Every structure is written in C-alpha cells, then in structure tokens.
Image (cartoon, rainbow, N blue to C red):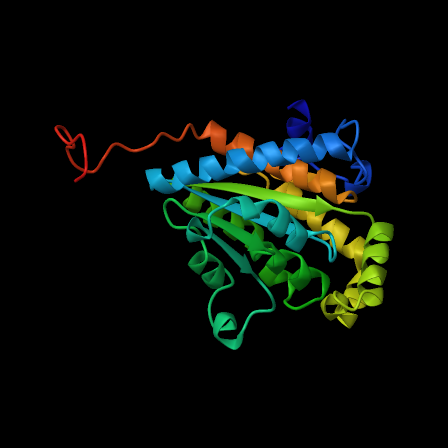
Amino acid sequence: MNWIRRLQLPPERPVSLKSLDPDDDLGFKDRTEAESLLQTNLGRLEELQYRLFAEGRRSLLVILQAMDAAGKDGAIRKVFSAFNPQGCRVTPFKAPTAEELAHDFLWRIHRAAPAQGEVAVFNRSHYEDVLAVRVLGLAPKAVWSRRYEQINRFESLLMENGTTVVKLFLHISKDEQRQRLEARLEDPARRWKFSRADLEARRYWKNYQTAYEEVFRRCGPSAAPWYVIPANRKWVRNVAISSLLVQVLEELKIRMPEPRENLMGITRVE
C-alpha cells in the first residue's frame, strides 16, 4: 500500500505537523471498505504473531505517542486484540514512581522491553522524558537535551539484539481533541477518563507540537522511523496501524521452527 510509505517521516529532517492532515482518509472510499481491510489485517496479525512467538528469536516493540484523547487506548483495543495475550504485553507509562525516579529515566522502560518471541506495546514511553518533561519544565534543558541521543542509543541496542521498533504518533487536531474531551464529560461511562490535567495540557498545545517535531527530527533514524497516523477518524487510525504492522511483520519473513527433536517414525499417537 503506497499510503503506508507516505505516513513514514523522512529520517533526520525537519517536520511540520501543521503540514500533515489529521483528517486524511488515506484514499478509502468509505468506512465500510476500511473496516473490511481491518478485519483481514487482524486475521493476518494473529497468524504473524503466532509465527513470531514460535520462532522465539526476535521481538516487536510498538511505541504509541499522542496528545490526550488521540486514541491510544482505542487503538490497543481494536488492533492489538488480534494478538494472543500470552505473547503480547501492554505497558502504560504514567508519571514515574519514587523508585523509578531513583534510577536513570530508561530503567523502567528497559524492564518492559519485549523478550524474544514477544510483542510489547508502550502506551506513552521514554519519549515523555523529552516531551512532558521539556514542556512542563520538570527538568532543566541541560538534562533533557542529552536524552535524545541516549534514546537513540537505547533503541539501537534493542534493534541490534533482534527487536524491531515501530514508533507511531497518533495525529489529531486541537478541535477534535476538544470534541472528544467534551464527549467524555457528557458520558457517565467515560467521565472517569477525564482529568483537569487534560485541560491544563491544552494550554501547552503549541509547545507540545514543537517538542514532538524535535523528537521526529532527532530520534527518527531510517532503522526506526516515526509514522504519523491520521487519527481524527478512528476507523482510519485502526486500519492504518493494522496495515503497517502487517507489513512490518511480513518483512521479517518469519519461518516456523523445526521440531525440537527428531520425530522420524512417529506417525500416530496412541
């Protein structure tokens, strides 16, 4: 699919989020067409994850970053439900605990990295340490400015040891975020997800956009590029993520392993 390549940001080049359309429909005629492909993708992802788990030599790390209400939780429910929970772990990274703060900022991240044969999904990630930390002034520039290269070295370490790293930014507009936050307030079943901190973060919208653009430029090498997923339409978000993951896993050319012992002569089980 040509549009998958279009979602990939060029390595180490300036990026303007204003130039990328969060309403992009990726050329689908309608929602029905996209959801039909989504179902096909989910079946294929189930098969590919089984192969990855059986092979037991490589792993997949999917990083989800976004502004509040962009749909990270929704994407996890709709797309990653295709994976067997025995081989897929989702880790949400919230404000660090006292124990985590007593270590370097990557300590808690590395602990959640996928083992061989596993898929790991990060709901937020180590990038918060050059996003929220930067925007909210939680650490001086002398500290967070060093972290871009530390992140690059960390991701290189993972990749050199068999982990494929896929980095996704779910791109929504400020107006769409407002509508989704208001919908949370109005829905008793979702009101628990609303926080005054969401309103506070909206005040820093431009600052976050600038911080993300810096991340894309400084932490988007060709070996682990960023993909910007248009997320104003949830069905576009889901089909885009699922199609990308199918492509990534298929490119690994995973083969089913041979039996662990010689089974010659065994033709039946009594």
